[in-house]
Length: 394
Length: 106
Image 1 (cartoon, rainbow over the protein chains, first blue to last red):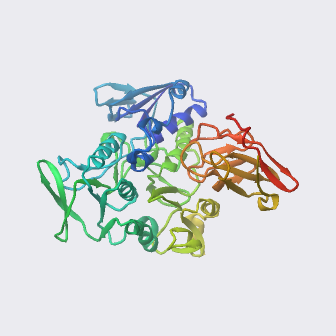
Image 2: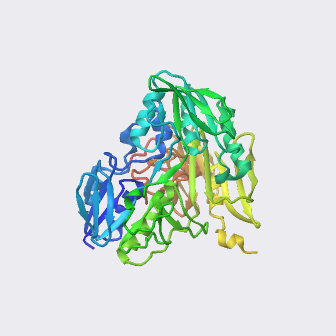
Image 3: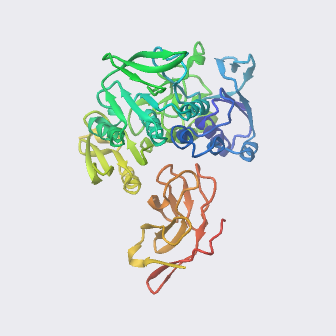
């Protein structure tokens, strides 16, 4: 293999570049990035960076020296628009055609939005550094009423940051219980109560039907129940959509992401996928689903690199999926995978103090652990979790 | 020099965070009988290494799993790239003594 093209200058893309070099690959590496930035860390975009505590420089994942050592050729500010596996060719948005023996798909996902949001000033999504800078500018422009649509983790973190900036925040969630899919009903209610603990209004069980505006700028959010919530700034945090449009017609199997085996291999030889865009069977959860966690992007990279270089699917990372969220100065950590019916059991602390560790059990086996501000116990327990296959056994 | 605790209060496998009398928090570990002291805050992002997972002479950050060698302060894997400072620590007459003025970046 003489040239590998990594499509996506992300954590997943960069981690794969690093892994390729660690594995001894000595050929050319080209990284294509839609954004003009070199790879940066996204989690702080809704937290410290949005609040203004850290600068964009602090988000950089690598350094000039490291990139020189890795011998990466960057093609930034342009995106891949087509892949022709037979010709081993990737077409870019500037018309350039790249040829590569191996392709790493690391295009991630894009923020979903809601109808009526396009073209109105004051309405934001948050995915990229540029998104975060635009949102921050709007949060700091002296208009106090912030509405967050979607009480998922990005929405909750933005609400928390806006609250700490002294703004009046309302969170609107279409589901009756926020985070129910990730945490179950009981813990979803508990985590979302952090909003109301801090005087942030939380309105659940009602969708958004549109926006009111004046002079091209949003002035309010229309709810399905007929109410209008006044808004100066709106953040739409309603999930993501994998960035796979560019693969149409390529023959790469796409179905809610790039469909992969456990080794990150796609159905096309010498084409692998990593990160948010990759839908791999997970040995811990037993599910064939995309995992949008920072940690997964880091861990999958080694697997993808070994698969690409060896031509056979490498063993996948087997640790339970893990993510964290910082809200209202409380650190939430979850490892494992929660299914409906898994019951959380309090192991330490108490729910009222917002400092606790709870373990979810399935057939008596620990399958997930959730903690607020108890990292030490959390990290002990995450090592005791049992994979879904084993937990399902009587 | 700071007298931190009695050695019984820091048994093997345990860790402790020191915040009094030091410029920045320091984490102490008893790794199978040997006591080590390093900066408590991970060099990657804000997390307390005293809350980390101790395995041999290495501690894994509780937030993003960066690992540091307690003997040198050097990170052994990403996402951390910068070392933590190490501090001399001794056990005398059953007391854990932290020598804070001497530690320098590796």
